[in-house]
Image (cartoon, rainbow, N blue to C red; front, side, top):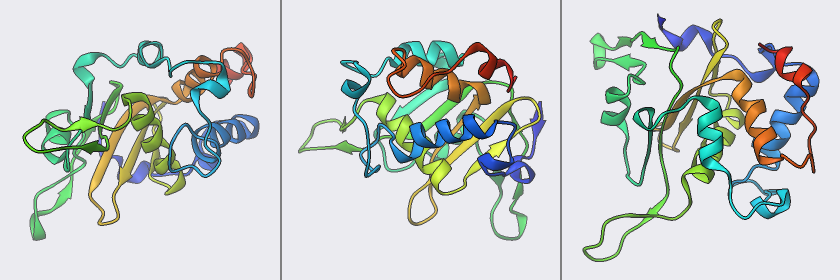
Length: 199
């Protein structure tokens, strides 16, 4: 389905999630996110993990390798175009909203990196932590778009307004990822009923 996403920008409180689900999502992805930018951040070890189960998360979200790009770069503008995640086109007086495909889960984002001498850029964090950081920022800054087909678009920007991430995920993926990371129910308990109530 091709749509112009701008009119779907909503906060999580305007979504179909229950109050309990909203509290859980906000706690996991924002307040206590696995992200350096979260003052109360958790580590994988807090969940009894050695590392974030990124492959399992991608599999559950239906994000294929063809629809995933985590780049150690300063800009992702061309990559957003290549992945049909550019929501505005043209410049100046010709600038206008662009309809994009919102049915296919995909992730495009920058990741922090270091570079020395003639070496290639080296990511400073893993792909999972990078994506979770961008999700945190999307929610914290209100750059969330909830669609009628059950998907959402999450967007992150730098201080100058440049896009650092756009991703389309099914809304239930937010709950699925909590269940995968906290599979031992250390902090959260997600039941089948909670998943199906948002489908």
